[in-house]
Length: 245
Length: 121
Image 1 (cartoon, rainbow over the protein chains, first blue to last red):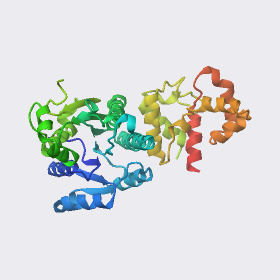
Image 2: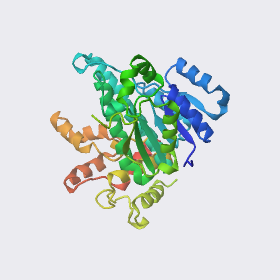
Image 3: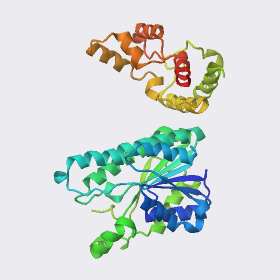
Image 4: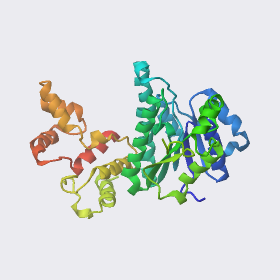
């Protein structure tokens, strides 16, 4: 696969999927810059990519902390060709029982803050007249389970931000894709699948969860020149989970 | 650095227009035909070329009419209020803008220059 650019910012860089993606990027001769929100995340990235230390970097970014955007962009030297956005706080609550203060802060962190990051990164990309952004949404955006209302709402709002960016700046070489993965045998999904294994897998037409490797491979494809025709759109990658009733 | 000449270079590229029609008195939207996406590109180019922070709402006078409404609602001296809100524009320029409001978007090339000079000072 060929890529137009080299430097790839990965938001939410300390999750397993981000690490897997970073490894594939390094193999593809891209330079991943992974964000972490605390020391534990920094150490996790460092430990899992220790065999390729000079081929990646990690930077602090805490969703909700606006000062951290300045330091992030300063450290990236205003030089970003790609952005992959995994960052998302978890918030499970029935709509009618949610703590309303938590709702306000959840949307501030997961929608408004993301909008600021997207705006700032898009302006950097405009200077280079190119850029590709992939937002990692969720099958829950299309079909949430009870308790996922706010999570799904934040994902859908974020999808709209990315979609409009691709719509507005496509003619300036900046394009976007949203990927909606279903159950992945990784991170938060792994425990859920372990706890509800039969029930979960039976819902998926391909009768298995996605592996993190195949999701990372798909993301890499959507960053590559081969996928240049995809813009301002959402793509489901869920084994058919959300296709039927 | 001649700010006007730099601005001209940027506008020629973004708007695909002839250099000679870009004067300090030219209206950016009314006459030169700049649209919202062009203004975004212009803001990014000014940030890059002059190495200054650009607030799109300020430099493109986007909140001008909102400020006029606020001043009236709060019974403030309109010109004084605008001087405080848009400190990069002279009182005389603001008087001209107020007299020109009904004609459409009042932003001129010279307002961009004022903003850049103010940010660099």
